[in-house]
Length: 358
Image (cartoon, rainbow, N blue to C red; front, side):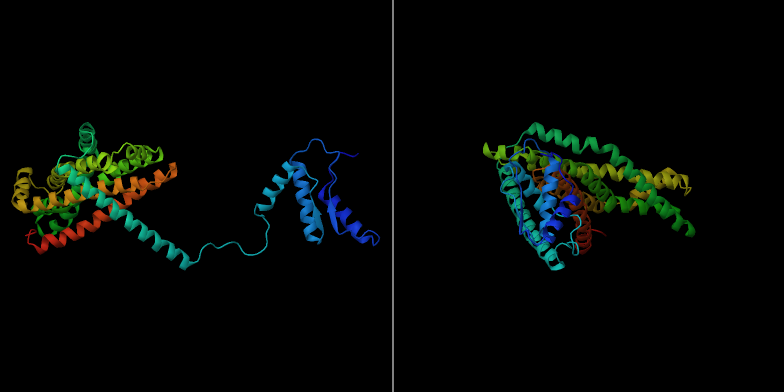
C-alpha cells in the first residue's frame, strides 16, 4: 500500500475523474483506515480538505471509519472561523445595543455604589460606638503612606504651581505697576482652591490607585472572601482605615501645599517682580483670612474622602484577573479626579452662597 498522503489537488482530480465516469457516478466519499497505523496533523489537514471539496461538489463525506482522536480534531477544525470566508465582516453590536448595555451597566454600577456607601455608613456607626474591627497598626501605617510619604511629590507640584501662578500674575499686573498684588493672587488662589485641588489630584494618582490595586489584588487572591468567611466585614477591616487615613491627612497635606505654593509665588515675585520678600509676605498675610483657610480645609477633607472612596470602591468591584486589577486602578484614578473637579465646582458655589468667600 502506498503510504504517501496525496495532495488536495490530486484528490480533487480523482473526484472529478470519478464524477466524469458515468459508470461510477459517486454520491459520497468514504475512508478505509484498516491499514492506518500512525498519523499526524498532515492527515487532519488532508481529511478537512477532502470534506471541503465534497461540500463544494455536493458529495457526501462518510468519516465513520476515522479514529476517534481524528474526529475530535476535525470537529475543532470545522468550528474554527475561516480566514477567507465570504460576506462582510462582523460589525459587532449596533448603536442601540451598545446604548442598552451602557444603561444596564449604569444601573448595576449605581446599585453597587449605593450598597458600598450603605455598608460604609454601617462601618462608621460601628466606629463611633467602638465596635469596628480593624487593625490600629495598619491605620498608622496607612497614615504614614498617605501623609509623610506623599510630601516630596506634593512639595514639588505645589511649589511649581505657585511659580506658574506668580509668573502669570506678574505678567499682567506689571503693566499697571502693581506687581505687589501678585502676593494676593497667589495666596488667595492657593489657599482657597489650588492647594486642596493639587493635593487631591496627587493623592488620587498616588494613594487612590494604590488602594484600588491592593484591594483588587486581594479580590484576585480571594482574601476578601476569606475575611467574610471568618465573619470579618471587609468594609470595616479594609475600607474604614483607608478612609480615616486620607480624611485625616489630606487637610494637613493641603496646609503644607498652601505654604509651598505661597513660597513658589514669593520666589517669582522677588526674582521677577522686584518685590522684597518682607513686603510679599506682609501682603500675603493681609490678603488671606481665616475664612479662606477654612474653605481650603473643608475642600481638602471632601477631596480626601472622594479619593479614598473611589479607590476602595473600584478595588472591591475588581474582577478575578490581573487585567481586572489594572482596570480597577485606572478607573479609581479617573473616578476620583472627575468627582474632585465636580466637588470643587459645587463647593465654590456653596461657599459663595453662604458668604464664606468674602
